[in-house]
Length: 228
Image (tube, one colour):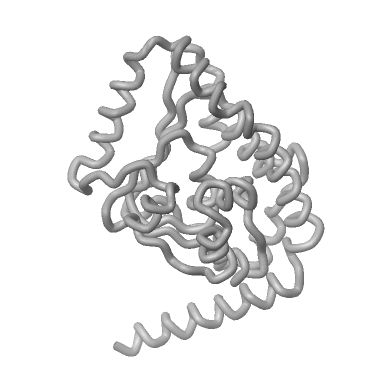
């Protein structure tokens, strides 16, 4: 994802970037099936791929559109506030089980979500682990608009094509006027979150115990299915 965004962000002729998912899901969150492999790959330090990805989304001059084609979990939710426009299918839902897995908010969402939807709604997602329907996410301001599932991506591309017909200088200037007052706060939130994830949460005992329990639960479900 980072490589693709870096390439697109560096192409002057590209004005709009659309991100969507493949298959039934927009995102399924972090890979939890292999604890040791997952822990070994995690890095949140400045200059890491994760820290750089968030910074790119915050600083990009392109119009960023998220096309949420199905359920979204984890970073697929927390990063949505860094996009300019977010469209979702009616049966999409959104959840961020960070606390459940011994982790914390990411993608600058500890700043962007309370600002966007209010502290209590953000706490419902992050602290209580509530699941938001597409309709709830739209009311909270996380989703721009819900579009029909049929021809969903084509409809989003149609919106992007309409926007792309606007004068490019006016697009860039208007986005910059809206983003500039928030950019440093978002960058600071990314720095804070990544520092906590790197120094306190990633590989912590709470995290490892939560993932072990997840794996036990998954094994139990697989065995139950095999007996049916």
